[in-house]
Image (cartoon, rainbow, N blue to C red; front, top):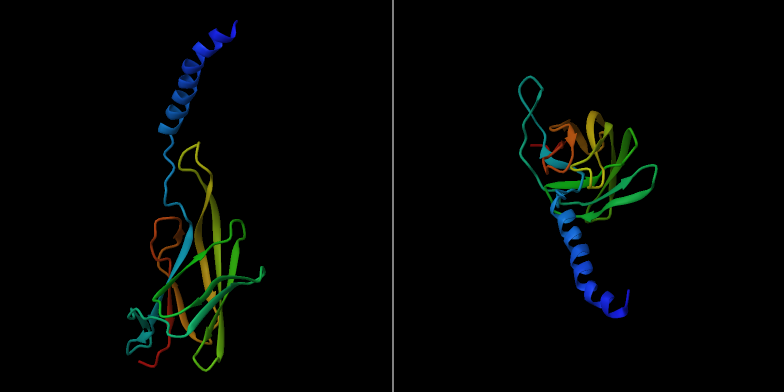
Length: 174
């Protein structure tokens, strides 16, 4: 085969390769919003006359909030101020995540609480050509009680649906 023959076939071969690329790309249905994170809402704790927790009002945390993943000693939320919720990553394979919340006021006084989230990890594929994601099902949650009054699971499925998973209730004296 001569050089001129190869040159004449080059556009056809290139077009064929690009055609396969476009066909392959058409069949991919990987979601663009695929970040798996847990969402915690902040609420003021209110109790009824029987001493049972009732739905509180959403509040913003005025103190500076820093969250550290215990065991890895990694800051996963750094110096958040005046927010009514927080979004945190979830460990891929651990059965329990332990996070420390450090609340620092304007006088540089810090109070810490710990939250332990026990979960079941589940591999999730949207499509065979997409990367695998790990979804989680919360089976238990507990916390220390320095600033936190109660933590409730509102949605045990941690995936990329964007729904609130936990409600943290603070005793605000109301």
